[in-house]
Image (cartoon, rainbow, N blue to C red; front, side, top):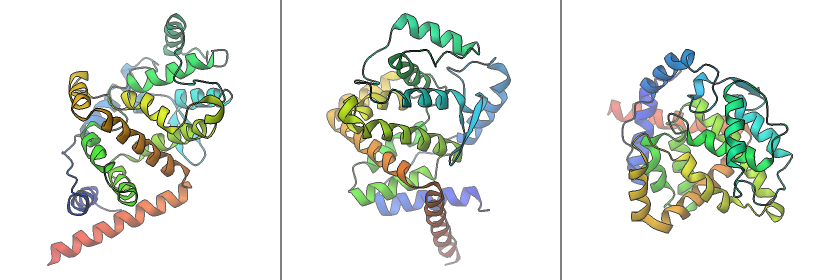
Length: 267
């Protein structure tokens, strides 16, 4: 096992030296400890609950994924052809009732309309205590999407090395589902660009509130939206990589960086 601090330093150095991307220091480990300590206080709720405190299901090739996410994606898979999926809003009254049932442990997705399930899925990500895409990586991810195609992919992969393994598994599972949705865009009219515009606000929530996000959006305007379209496409590509190849690619990347770092320290 590598020293995680050494891995982080090596990745940060590579991002800064090769791509000109600086990453602000995060507090991921402290946050995870707080989430684990809060697990017993959730009372079986699904919404507004840290990932670690949610019930999980084992999904082949992905590992432990939040059960609600698995159930929602599985249910929607049967309606993946529905036109306007994720774009059309479900009934506000039904969504509130479904959310209340789920938070009380009732299974209700099998009989729910697809647009209602899609609305619950967006709300699930939007109400996470901490965004699934770590807030301290947002600016770096924006900058990575401004690079050329090959550099963008490499920089995004490096940034994923700064995320927890569980976070990456959940992202790969979810983006693989979105990839399947986009593959049926001739029927559902929801290609990867449309999906990116819809999900960016739900995945980019910050603990500092909506005002900061609004100011960034006003400053960067349409380019930022296009950036997130490209970012989603990059994750869709990553989701299509077989799990054992993904692990091997990430392992080689990190090992190379650690070796470089160790050699530099000896000089």
